[in-house]
Every structure is written in structure tokens, then in C-alpha cells.
Length: 104
View 1 (cartoon, rainbow, N blue to C red):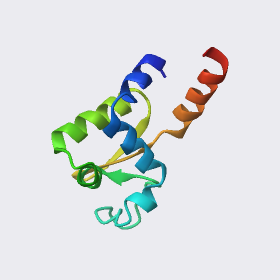
View 2: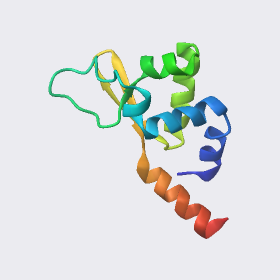
View 3: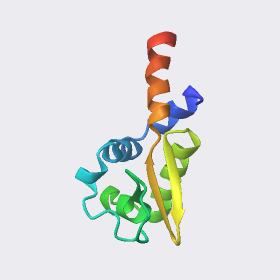
View 4: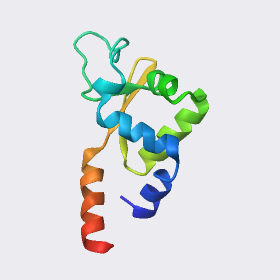
């Protein structure tokens, strides 16, 4: 985790909203899992298309946002077929909280 990359990723309202939504995916994406093959589970994972729909932004913009957050370590992704699922990387959030307590 590079703190400056995390701060840059958090400096956009839509990216921040995506992280908030992914904190409670069952609440914000109730139809999630429609494209997952039987027997496959990514706990908390949400398809890019569902994120795009909720964000009301273009696919390319949402993909760029997700990539920025993944590069900062805030998100993890798994690909199944043509769909990519994203979830929060809770380890990074724990490290970020520790960073705030000890460094700032």
C-alpha cells in the first residue's frame, strides 16, 4: 500500500461511493450473482456491469475507476468468463487505519 496512491483513489466522489457500496454489497447490489457459474462464489464480489449501472457512468469510466482503486490496493478482482467481479480488499483498509493511527 502506497498511501499517496490510496489518497488519490479516494479523492473522487464516485470512487468513494463505489467503495461504500462494496462495503455492503448485499444491500447495494441485491441481484448480484446472476452471471456467476454454478458453484462459484466470490464473497462480496460485484460485477462491473452492476457497479456501472449504480454509478450511472460509462463502462470505460467505471473500469478506469476500478483499475485506479485496484492499483492502490483498495480492491481485489476475479474474472469468470466475460465478467469481472470486484470486492474491497479489507486488509488494505486495516493497514490504512493503522497508518492513520501511527503516521498522521
